[in-house]
Image 1 (spheres, each protein chain N blue to C red):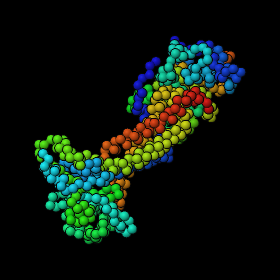
Image 2: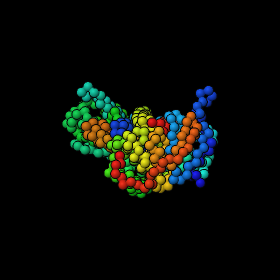
Image 3: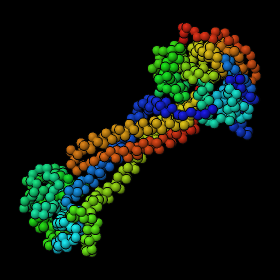
Image 4: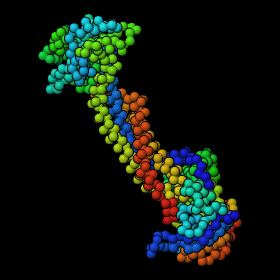
Length: 242
Length: 378
């Protein structure tokens, strides 16, 4: 069963003569372990597609199935639960909670899912240590570098062992090397644990991580090709992490 | 896909973190609530303190019934004048053990340009009626030409033992201070029966009769027998205390209600605005939480818990200040008699929490409209 199945999905914003067709009859299947890079110019509909897959937006037409479940029949509360259990999100602007330390940010999805504070702390700590952030557990986001923030965001996205990770322009707010390193780290971690990853990005260098590269233009899926995927799907020693 | 129970601890954890992150805002919301609580608790304490004081003296008067002129219900609002011959009638009523005259009325005198109001009571040693509840300094029983005044009046108006005061055309020497007789704008004072009679000008009459009933007698039946005389009413002691305490209620309740509303309005506005601005500022973070799977209900919990936490902190501060300020004010301003009861602390706490919950409705409404898809916008 596909982790994600996008079936002839369209999304229109507005109505009448001001209507804008952002996504136009797109179909896409993503399996466990897939690393899909979605590319395309600004305004092509990449992020809209990602939002629909992430159940943050409803399609105007077509269906999105997550692990075989049609999400259009789920209530808002059920969609929240689905996102909590099945998805991990990585954002362009990191979007860490400013009042919480790095450790607490990673604990948040776990606590929301009902994990005890003690176990959430142990798991968050282990996850951050794995991402070479063991020395930054008690730091607030404002005291972290961009790369460190994005690694905390990655740890948060992986906290509830999601089947699918959705990353929106994860390298955009980082310098070139840091951005690439952090994203490769995300892909390696996900790949090693057989999770599916969908990355929306302009960054051509991410092709080296992707197994599939999809291009969207004017809301339409125009091409699909294989990625270079030269990852070893195991963690690096950590040298050179941002 | 079922929604499981909300882990309240997770939300409280975030609520507290959000609160303490913005220290200035926290200070404003806690300060606003503390001000409201201080206001409500102080005025309620004053109300309770004065109510108790007025009842305190009347409770010490030995009587099962206060017999009044028909229609008179208390010592202050309605005059009661009864001929002393009523005593013969009362002692003849079946079940009555004793009937003693009790006389007193309000008189005012000028002291350093200020009107001092006293309620002069005849201290009838012979009948053991009209003595002060407690004497804290000086003589316990006045002699002819002497008066015992309340310590609060003595201290606040600087009238010392040994000073003389003009009362209804006579000059009386202050012989002692009593306690428990200060009531709002006047206080109880005690003079000998002869002096009181010449001040009160009630020849052959008194204001009330204090009736005690024989052991084993049904008090209700005795009252009915007394009230067979249409010129008198028999009021139970508890009822008479209540009737007199109502003077405080009537004077203060409207003020308390107004201050209560002001306090609630201030508290709600401060909490509401601070939590609302915090919610707007953190709209994106709430969007992130929605995106990663936190339900609307859980987010509402965060906001309500933030408001309630601020309110509880404000309550603790305000209640603490009310206790300290009341105690300190009582030292310097003797008229400031307060009593803060656990019951009052309880209902004020409940009002504070309710205030916080109501004031978080506006931010909660704002939360409901946050679109989680916004988090993908840079």
